[in-house]
Image (cartoon, rainbow over all chains, first blue to last red; front, side, top):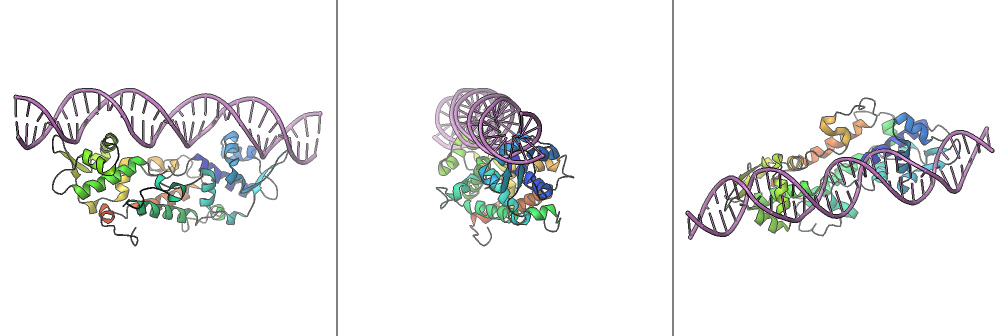
Length: 139
Length: 139
DNA sequence: TCGAATTCCTATTGACAAAGTAGGAATTCA
DNA sequence: TGAATTCCTACTTTGTCAATAGGAATTCGA
Protein backbone atom coordinates (compact mmCIF):
# COMPACT_ATOMS: atom_id res chain seq x y z
CA UNK A 1 0.00 0.00 0.00
CA UNK A 2 1.52 3.25 -1.10
CA UNK A 3 -1.35 5.49 -0.04
CA UNK A 4 -3.06 4.81 3.30
CA UNK A 5 -6.28 6.33 4.60
CA UNK A 6 -4.26 9.29 5.78
CA UNK A 7 -3.39 10.23 2.25
CA UNK A 8 -6.80 9.46 0.91
CA UNK A 9 -8.59 11.45 3.59
CA UNK A 10 -6.19 14.34 3.13
CA UNK A 11 -6.91 14.42 -0.56
CA UNK A 12 -10.65 14.15 0.01
CA UNK A 13 -10.77 16.93 2.53
CA UNK A 14 -8.70 19.24 0.36
CA UNK A 15 -11.13 18.64 -2.45
CA UNK A 16 -14.11 19.10 -0.16
CA UNK A 17 -12.74 22.40 1.10
CA UNK A 18 -11.96 23.54 -2.42
CA UNK A 19 -15.49 22.76 -3.46
CA UNK A 20 -17.30 24.33 -0.50
CA UNK A 21 -15.15 27.17 0.73
CA UNK A 22 -16.74 29.91 -1.35
CA UNK A 23 -15.46 33.05 0.31
CA UNK A 24 -15.69 31.62 3.83
CA UNK A 25 -14.35 28.71 5.81
CA UNK A 26 -15.24 25.04 5.85
CA UNK A 27 -15.53 23.39 9.25
CA UNK A 28 -14.35 19.87 9.91
CA UNK A 29 -17.77 19.04 11.26
CA UNK A 30 -19.44 19.77 7.94
CA UNK A 31 -16.75 18.16 5.89
CA UNK A 32 -16.71 15.02 8.00
CA UNK A 33 -20.47 14.78 7.72
CA UNK A 34 -20.39 15.09 3.96
CA UNK A 35 -17.67 12.49 3.66
CA UNK A 36 -19.20 10.26 6.34
CA UNK A 37 -15.95 9.88 8.24
CA UNK A 38 -14.86 10.61 11.79
CA UNK A 39 -14.32 14.28 12.46
CA UNK A 40 -11.79 13.37 15.12
CA UNK A 41 -9.69 11.44 12.66
CA UNK A 42 -9.81 14.22 10.10
CA UNK A 43 -8.53 16.47 12.84
CA UNK A 44 -5.53 14.19 13.29
CA UNK A 45 -4.73 14.38 9.62
CA UNK A 46 -5.17 18.08 9.19
CA UNK A 47 -2.97 18.74 12.19
CA UNK A 48 0.04 17.27 10.36
CA UNK A 49 2.30 20.31 9.84
CA UNK A 50 2.86 19.70 6.13
CA UNK A 51 -0.88 19.45 5.61
CA UNK A 52 -1.92 22.44 7.69
CA UNK A 53 0.63 24.54 5.85
CA UNK A 54 -1.45 24.14 2.75
CA UNK A 55 -4.45 25.61 4.51
CA UNK A 56 -5.54 28.75 6.26
CA UNK A 57 -7.35 28.07 9.49
CA UNK A 58 -9.57 30.14 11.70
CA UNK A 59 -10.67 29.08 15.18
CA UNK A 60 -13.90 29.86 16.93
CA UNK A 61 -17.47 29.96 15.77
CA UNK A 62 -17.94 30.06 12.00
CA UNK A 63 -14.28 29.17 11.75
CA UNK A 64 -12.74 26.36 9.77
CA UNK A 65 -10.33 25.97 6.91
CA UNK A 66 -9.81 27.28 3.42
CA UNK A 67 -7.12 26.62 0.84
CA UNK A 68 -4.05 28.81 0.99
CA UNK A 69 -3.73 28.71 -2.80
CA UNK A 70 -6.06 28.05 -5.67
CA UNK A 71 -6.94 24.42 -6.48
CA UNK A 72 -4.95 24.48 -9.69
CA UNK A 73 -1.81 25.17 -7.71
CA UNK A 74 -1.86 21.91 -5.72
CA UNK A 75 -0.88 18.62 -7.25
CA UNK A 76 -2.24 15.34 -5.99
CA UNK A 77 1.31 14.17 -5.36
CA UNK A 78 2.00 17.18 -3.19
CA UNK A 79 -1.05 16.54 -1.02
CA UNK A 80 -0.28 12.85 -0.64
CA UNK A 81 3.34 13.48 0.27
CA UNK A 82 2.26 16.03 2.85
CA UNK A 83 -0.07 13.59 4.54
CA UNK A 84 1.98 10.42 4.22
CA UNK A 85 5.40 11.89 4.86
CA UNK A 86 6.64 10.25 1.70
CA UNK A 87 5.20 8.08 -0.98
CA UNK A 88 8.30 6.18 -1.97
CA UNK A 89 7.41 2.69 -3.10
CA UNK A 90 10.25 0.81 -1.46
CA UNK A 91 12.40 1.36 1.62
CA UNK A 92 15.62 1.42 -0.42
CA UNK A 93 14.61 4.89 -1.58
CA UNK A 94 13.74 6.27 1.82
CA UNK A 95 15.47 9.39 3.02
CA UNK A 96 16.39 10.39 -0.50
CA UNK A 97 17.75 7.00 -1.48
CA UNK A 98 20.56 6.54 0.96
CA UNK A 99 20.78 2.76 0.70
CA UNK A 100 24.23 1.38 1.51
CA UNK A 101 24.34 -1.21 -1.24
CA UNK A 102 22.82 0.75 -4.05
CA UNK A 103 26.06 0.64 -6.00
CA UNK A 104 26.30 -3.16 -6.12
CA UNK A 105 22.55 -3.61 -6.35
CA UNK A 106 21.31 -4.61 -9.78
CA UNK A 107 17.74 -3.96 -8.72
CA UNK A 108 18.13 -0.45 -7.42
CA UNK A 109 17.62 1.25 -10.79
CA UNK A 110 14.24 -0.45 -11.00
CA UNK A 111 13.10 1.20 -7.79
CA UNK A 112 14.37 4.54 -9.01
CA UNK A 113 12.43 4.14 -12.22
CA UNK A 114 9.32 3.09 -10.35
CA UNK A 115 9.53 6.08 -8.06
CA UNK A 116 9.88 8.38 -11.02
CA UNK A 117 6.91 6.91 -12.83
CA UNK A 118 4.71 7.25 -9.75
CA UNK A 119 5.69 10.81 -8.93
CA UNK A 120 5.43 11.97 -12.49
CA UNK A 121 1.92 10.63 -12.64
CA UNK A 122 0.74 12.08 -9.34
CA UNK A 123 2.39 15.43 -9.91
CA UNK A 124 0.68 15.71 -13.27
CA UNK A 125 -2.76 16.01 -11.71
CA UNK A 126 -3.94 19.10 -9.85
CA UNK A 127 -6.88 19.44 -7.49
CA UNK A 128 -8.54 21.53 -10.15
CA UNK A 129 -8.24 18.68 -12.62
CA UNK A 130 -10.05 16.44 -10.19
CA UNK A 131 -12.75 18.99 -9.41
CA UNK A 132 -13.37 19.55 -13.10
CA UNK A 133 -13.54 15.78 -13.50
CA UNK A 134 -11.31 16.53 -16.39
CA UNK A 135 -11.84 12.98 -17.16
CA UNK A 136 -10.56 9.79 -18.55
CA UNK A 137 -8.46 11.47 -21.21
CA UNK A 138 -6.23 13.17 -18.66
CA UNK A 139 -6.54 10.90 -15.63
CA UNK B 1 5.56 1.11 0.84
CA UNK B 2 4.41 -0.81 -2.16
CA UNK B 3 7.18 -3.39 -2.15
CA UNK B 4 8.26 -4.87 1.18
CA UNK B 5 11.28 -7.04 1.88
CA UNK B 6 9.23 -10.01 0.76
CA UNK B 7 9.02 -8.69 -2.75
CA UNK B 8 12.57 -7.48 -2.80
CA UNK B 9 13.97 -10.76 -1.54
CA UNK B 10 11.81 -12.71 -3.97
CA UNK B 11 13.15 -10.68 -6.84
CA UNK B 12 16.72 -11.03 -5.63
CA UNK B 13 16.53 -14.74 -5.21
CA UNK B 14 14.95 -15.25 -8.62
CA UNK B 15 17.80 -13.28 -10.13
CA UNK B 16 20.37 -15.16 -8.08
CA UNK B 17 18.95 -18.49 -9.20
CA UNK B 18 18.83 -17.34 -12.80
CA UNK B 19 22.45 -16.33 -12.61
CA UNK B 20 23.79 -19.42 -10.87
CA UNK B 21 21.60 -22.33 -11.87
CA UNK B 22 23.63 -23.47 -14.86
CA UNK B 23 22.21 -26.89 -15.54
CA UNK B 24 21.82 -27.78 -11.88
CA UNK B 25 20.01 -26.47 -8.82
CA UNK B 26 20.72 -23.55 -6.52
CA UNK B 27 20.37 -24.21 -2.80
CA UNK B 28 18.92 -21.64 -0.43
CA UNK B 29 22.04 -21.97 1.68
CA UNK B 30 24.29 -20.75 -1.12
CA UNK B 31 21.91 -18.08 -2.26
CA UNK B 32 21.39 -16.74 1.24
CA UNK B 33 25.13 -16.62 1.73
CA UNK B 34 25.69 -14.70 -1.46
CA UNK B 35 22.95 -12.22 -0.63
CA UNK B 36 23.92 -12.07 3.04
CA UNK B 37 20.38 -12.64 4.27
CA UNK B 38 18.76 -15.22 6.51
CA UNK B 39 18.25 -18.57 4.83
CA UNK B 40 15.26 -19.19 7.06
CA UNK B 41 13.54 -16.06 5.87
CA UNK B 42 14.21 -16.86 2.23
CA UNK B 43 12.57 -20.19 2.92
CA UNK B 44 9.44 -18.38 4.11
CA UNK B 45 9.29 -16.39 0.94
CA UNK B 46 9.95 -19.19 -1.46
CA UNK B 47 7.31 -21.31 0.21
CA UNK B 48 4.59 -18.88 -0.89
CA UNK B 49 2.59 -20.91 -3.43
CA UNK B 50 2.63 -18.24 -6.13
CA UNK B 51 6.39 -17.97 -5.79
CA UNK B 52 7.19 -21.66 -5.70
CA UNK B 53 5.08 -22.16 -8.80
CA UNK B 54 7.62 -20.16 -10.71
CA UNK B 55 10.37 -22.57 -9.68
CA UNK B 56 11.27 -26.21 -9.92
CA UNK B 57 12.47 -27.64 -6.64
CA UNK B 58 14.35 -30.74 -5.71
CA UNK B 59 14.79 -31.96 -2.13
CA UNK B 60 17.72 -33.82 -0.69
CA UNK B 61 21.43 -33.44 -1.05
CA UNK B 62 22.52 -31.39 -4.05
CA UNK B 63 18.93 -30.29 -4.32
CA UNK B 64 17.65 -26.74 -4.56
CA UNK B 65 15.75 -24.61 -7.01
CA UNK B 66 15.88 -23.63 -10.64
CA UNK B 67 13.64 -21.44 -12.76
CA UNK B 68 10.68 -23.12 -14.40
CA UNK B 69 10.99 -20.83 -17.43
CA UNK B 70 13.75 -18.76 -18.95
CA UNK B 71 14.59 -15.41 -17.36
CA UNK B 72 13.17 -13.47 -20.28
CA UNK B 73 9.78 -14.99 -19.59
CA UNK B 74 9.36 -13.49 -16.12
CA UNK B 75 8.50 -9.87 -15.59
CA UNK B 76 9.48 -8.01 -12.46
CA UNK B 77 5.82 -7.22 -11.86
CA UNK B 78 4.93 -10.87 -11.97
CA UNK B 79 7.55 -11.78 -9.38
CA UNK B 80 6.56 -8.96 -7.06
CA UNK B 81 2.86 -9.77 -7.28
CA UNK B 82 3.61 -13.41 -6.53
CA UNK B 83 5.53 -12.53 -3.39
CA UNK B 84 3.42 -9.65 -2.14
CA UNK B 85 0.01 -11.02 -3.01
CA UNK B 86 -0.75 -7.81 -4.80
CA UNK B 87 1.02 -4.58 -5.45
CA UNK B 88 -1.98 -2.31 -5.67
CA UNK B 89 -1.10 1.13 -4.37
CA UNK B 90 -4.28 1.84 -2.42
CA UNK B 91 -6.84 -0.31 -0.65
CA UNK B 92 -9.68 0.98 -2.81
CA UNK B 93 -8.32 -1.20 -5.60
CA UNK B 94 -7.93 -4.35 -3.56
CA UNK B 95 -9.65 -7.50 -4.68
CA UNK B 96 -9.95 -6.26 -8.23
CA UNK B 97 -11.31 -2.86 -7.26
CA UNK B 98 -14.50 -3.80 -5.48
CA UNK B 99 -14.89 -0.55 -3.54
CA UNK B 100 -18.48 0.27 -2.66
CA UNK B 101 -18.30 3.97 -3.37
CA UNK B 102 -16.24 3.97 -6.51
CA UNK B 103 -19.15 5.33 -8.52
CA UNK B 104 -19.57 8.48 -6.44
CA UNK B 105 -15.87 8.83 -5.77
CA UNK B 106 -14.16 11.57 -7.72
CA UNK B 107 -10.77 10.27 -6.68
CA UNK B 108 -11.17 6.66 -7.73
CA UNK B 109 -10.02 7.23 -11.33
CA UNK B 110 -6.75 8.58 -9.96
CA UNK B 111 -6.05 5.31 -8.18
CA UNK B 112 -6.92 3.38 -11.29
CA UNK B 113 -4.52 5.46 -13.31
CA UNK B 114 -1.82 5.09 -10.71
CA UNK B 115 -2.23 1.35 -10.64
CA UNK B 116 -1.97 1.20 -14.40
CA UNK B 117 1.16 3.31 -14.51
CA UNK B 118 2.85 1.12 -11.89
CA UNK B 119 1.94 -2.18 -13.46
CA UNK B 120 2.84 -1.08 -16.94
CA UNK B 121 6.24 -0.10 -15.71
CA UNK B 122 6.95 -3.26 -13.74
CA UNK B 123 5.58 -5.56 -16.40
CA UNK B 124 7.82 -3.93 -18.95
CA UNK B 125 10.98 -5.28 -17.34
CA UNK B 126 11.96 -8.95 -17.45
CA UNK B 127 14.47 -10.75 -15.29
CA UNK B 128 16.66 -11.03 -18.35
CA UNK B 129 16.64 -7.25 -18.73
CA UNK B 130 17.93 -6.94 -15.19
CA UNK B 131 20.57 -9.63 -15.63
CA UNK B 132 21.80 -8.00 -18.80
CA UNK B 133 21.85 -4.69 -16.95
CA UNK B 134 20.19 -3.53 -20.11
CA UNK B 135 20.63 -0.25 -18.51
CA UNK B 136 19.42 3.22 -17.98
CA UNK B 137 17.87 3.52 -21.40
CA UNK B 138 15.34 0.77 -20.70
CA UNK B 139 15.03 0.85 -16.93
C1' DT C 1 22.73 -48.79 4.46
C1' DC C 2 24.19 -44.44 6.61
C1' DG C 3 24.76 -39.69 7.05
C1' DA C 4 24.84 -35.20 5.16
C1' DA C 5 22.32 -31.75 2.90
C1' DT C 6 18.44 -30.20 1.32
C1' DT C 7 13.31 -28.87 0.83
C1' DC C 8 8.91 -28.75 3.25
C1' DC C 9 5.71 -27.48 7.08
C1' DT C 10 3.84 -25.18 11.25
C1' DA C 11 4.35 -22.07 15.20
C1' DT C 12 5.97 -18.25 17.61
C1' DT C 13 7.89 -13.67 18.64
C1' DG C 14 8.89 -8.73 18.81
C1' DA C 15 8.40 -4.39 16.95
C1' DC C 16 5.96 -1.00 14.80
C1' DA C 17 2.48 1.55 12.27
C1' DA C 18 -2.22 2.34 10.92
C1' DA C 19 -6.72 3.69 12.23
C1' DG C 20 -9.33 5.60 15.24
C1' DT C 21 -10.96 7.33 20.04
C1' DA C 22 -10.94 10.60 23.95
C1' DG C 23 -10.83 14.70 26.68
C1' DG C 24 -10.06 19.11 27.27
C1' DA C 25 -7.67 23.94 26.47
C1' DA C 26 -7.74 28.06 23.71
C1' DT C 27 -10.06 30.94 20.43
C1' DT C 28 -13.70 33.53 18.07
C1' DC C 29 -18.05 35.15 16.99
C1' DA C 30 -23.10 36.75 17.68
C1' DT D 1 -22.10 34.62 27.96
C1' DG D 2 -22.53 30.54 25.25
C1' DA D 3 -22.00 28.01 21.17
C1' DA D 4 -18.91 26.37 17.85
C1' DT D 5 -14.72 25.86 16.33
C1' DT D 6 -9.49 24.80 16.07
C1' DC D 7 -5.58 23.12 18.67
C1' DC D 8 -2.96 19.76 21.52
C1' DT D 9 -1.70 15.41 23.84
C1' DA D 10 -2.47 10.89 25.04
C1' DC D 11 -4.29 6.32 24.55
C1' DT D 12 -6.03 1.83 22.44
C1' DT D 13 -6.66 -1.70 19.35
C1' DT D 14 -5.53 -4.36 15.57
C1' DG D 15 -2.83 -6.20 12.17
C1' DT D 16 1.27 -6.90 9.41
C1' DC D 17 6.20 -7.23 8.69
C1' DA D 18 10.40 -9.42 9.52
C1' DA D 19 12.43 -12.86 11.36
C1' DT D 20 13.44 -17.04 14.21
C1' DA D 21 12.80 -21.93 15.60
C1' DG D 22 12.38 -26.82 15.41
C1' DG D 23 11.67 -30.72 13.21
C1' DA D 24 9.67 -34.03 9.34
C1' DA D 25 10.39 -35.82 4.79
C1' DT D 26 13.33 -36.42 0.85
C1' DT D 27 17.46 -37.42 -1.89
C1' DC D 28 21.98 -38.18 -2.90
C1' DG D 29 26.97 -40.10 -2.55
C1' DA D 30 30.04 -43.11 -0.38
